[in-house]
Length: 386
Image 1 (cartoon, rainbow, N blue to C red):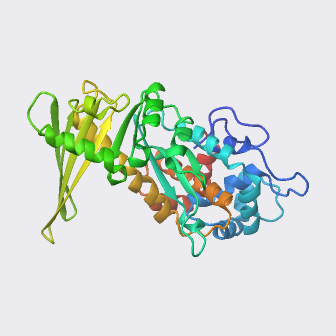
Image 2 (tube, helix red, strand yellow):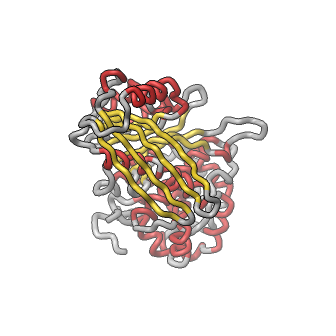
Image 3 (cartoon, rainbow, N blue to C red):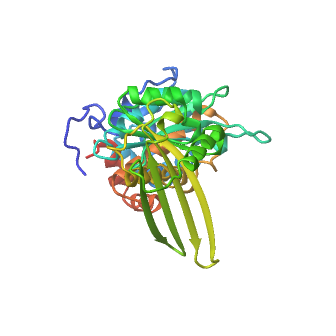
């Protein structure tokens, strides 16, 4: 892959590339005694992540074992490669994590221009930051583009706050105009609903047991209206999927007949989705009913479209969280520093974004591929995504 647009003459990072984004970060370290510049450090960390390494010690060893190659590819003047403690200190002290999250979001947004119309909100606790004997660690709330699993914005939920108060701040960092924002019970809030619609977007909330009162209200209204039925105000959709050893049937019914009774800001439709999963080998059936609501009117969002959006919302668990926890071992990486853990999480989302943008569904397979093609992996960091 060759860079085709303007390249910084000092560093060789193409304008709009991840390398250029790193170059724009402010180094928080005291200038005296700095041996390794911030941007090259972040580049080699990202390169190591693309090639299969996860935590600082493994990254340091990987870079050290390939020192001549890395120095030649990046034209680095380093006499020796950084120790793992250097990477940890840089993540703890050298990076403004808020600025890094913003630059990461801008970079990944360039990949999402032709992607999905849907953004999914969900939170994730970095389990490696939970001290022994305690239950609370760093908790991050992310806005994910569902088609490519690109994290367009991410923010830490403070120790004395929750996702309810963090979500408006997160939405303020992304462009929601013309998009539908989906979320679960923690995001199902009146103020957030108003913010999204007034910013030009639409919302789709999945109401579960954490919003027990609202869920009960929707369920009661659905029962009183005889939903589903064949009346004009009720529009059904149905799918049947066959997976390994199972059959899964989904039925969704949407209606605007519930709007007045719900009295929710900008509500356009209420919905009910029943899901039945049949395990062929065990010959067992598991049933689940989900309720929700959306600001999209029926004329713009038929029941089949709403069903697809609900399913895409749930993809954040497999598409993003599983890749971070299973493939990138995010939860298994023990980090005492909350700041360093957040920086490492951003690097994970960037690596996943690059991999998904290039068309890989299997992130582990992509990392093995790049481990054998380090120069190609580096080109995707130094060149603007196409």
